[in-house]
Image (cartoon, rainbow, N blue to C red; front, side):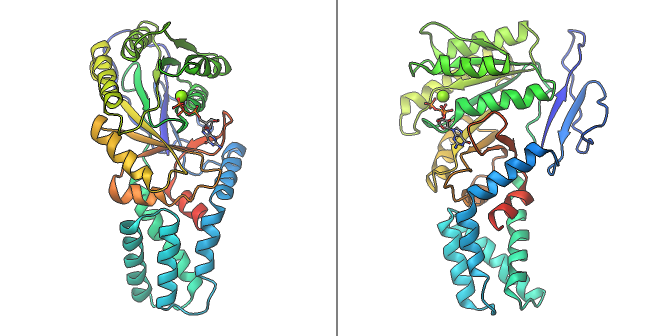
Length: 344
Ligand SMILES: Nc1nc2c(ncn2[C@@H]2O[C@H](COP(=O)(O)OP(=O)(O)OP(=O)(O)O)[C@@H](O)[C@H]2O)c(=O)[nH]1
Ligand SMILES: [Mg+2]
């Protein structure tokens, strides 16, 4: 689920706070200013193809879990096998335990005797566990909404920014990109390619300091009346303390360019990182107070259970999930849909 607004021109006076509609039909005319709120189960061809890629990506986990329920009896062996399958899927010990406890309780309360019915109960329990992660990225309360994107090297930050730019543009928001990865040689050019594909502006500097580029970009975003400024930062490990400090500095300097900014700090996580993903979430959250996550590469060999671990340990909203390198391969997270893909 997510919400974006479509803004028409409005006077340059005080920023407006926009209500967040939760149910707007796909083809409904948009009031002005408007929050465009996508339904969790949009039936667009793009969404359908994205869901099918997600299912394919999680196939290994789903078939492991499915194998648990092929027997005829609900006994300790079933619970033990399920425990192993969930831990193997990166769900972590605590989330796995929570799911198993709920399941045992439900099986008893509902007097279930068919293993297939247990699987349906597991889908419900997993959906409930993941539900706190399903929260919209809301654009429109500030102008611009400043979004800082962080993460370890190669997680998919720049690619996700490219896809997110398209996503936002399609919903009527104007976007400005900031090339604040001044560390890696070709980073600026890489972001520039995404800017071109989306025909949006990019702010960059020759050499330059990441905090200075970010400051410039927010200032430009304000001057040009952009709805969103997306700031691409260099990859870093939480153990590289000086680089973690640099990131905190970027955040502080952004606040000087616009009070209250950055409004969103999104950690991009490679879905294949396994249990280390949780350590990344904790470290970046402790340093920056994250507002959201994007999980990438759930099209490959990802096991997918890490979302359950995140939900249990550090429930930060998952705004988007990436299932490929193409522009359209980023979609909003829906707990039920994800649980179903993991247990397909
Ligand atoms: N299969 C797949 N590949 C992805 C996805 N997202 C990103 N990638 C690929 O992952 C690689 C790294 O992506 P980048 O966007 O450059 O990652 P980054 O976090 O910006 O990397 P640094 O700036 O070097 O830290 C590229 O080859 C992308 O095409 C995804 O959802 N699925
Ligand atoms: Mg990058």
